[in-house]
Length: 371
Image 1 (tube, rainbow, N blue to C red):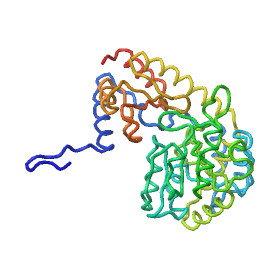
Image 2: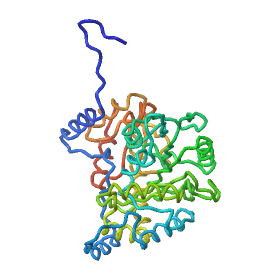
Image 3: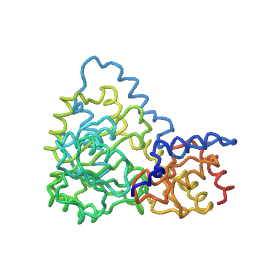
């Protein structure tokens, strides 16, 4: 629609502008505010991390892009023990957290302007940013039957940020089958998978034998220890699956100097070999989610999905930005659903990566909130 002469068309504020206004309102609340929008870990790193880091100070040489043998073995053992997936050392690769892989994979796979990258209908922005950086087109679509013929890379996210949706073995199997029809690489972003269980069962990996049988071709899974081990500041992650793809990615990363620092490799090996601290963190997040769920529902918001992950996805039947602004005015900072795609309109995301004292503050504010 063209604006009439002498008038100005309405301008849609950018996510950065919306975020700045939300924070301004929340900070101005006289009773203080609680940040349930920033999904950054706040709990202490585990003792196993501290012990490993204390012995990892000496690192005079360049680190191995593919990871030292001890780390590759720890990754292989972790996938076998925690995800039920059998891998060889050649099928795993450490990454600088998972976000850099999300952003760089289209480039590392040689994608360009004639290619399509598929992302979930609701999605973390990094999938799209990586595709746009190489000039590829982006399609936001959850139905494999609707993925276009020019698709070269498909991102799945289970449990999904922001709404906690998880994919079943059958849903994963159907997605992989369609990817292979298209000749596309398909990647499961599984960074929250071990912090939840589904009806007492682990959330399935895209590399699960029930999904792919014994054929890992064109299939990858990525994971981060940022949330499970509270070490986001050290950027530790990994990607696993198709050995040929892993080799190609490793070679290009080596040329670009994308190496996980040697001390981080040592720490990553230690935390992947210790399950006790992960169970403790999972229980902590579960308790926070349940406390917050009760308060959010009592405040009149309707929670959708939110079966897994670290978030509550809620609505009160209006623009998500409007809901977020109203919450900011009572000192509760959340993320509008519009930040995650058009289908997020009318929703907001509450995160529980927050200290208990601030969670308490948010719950008290919600208890006194009225429309």
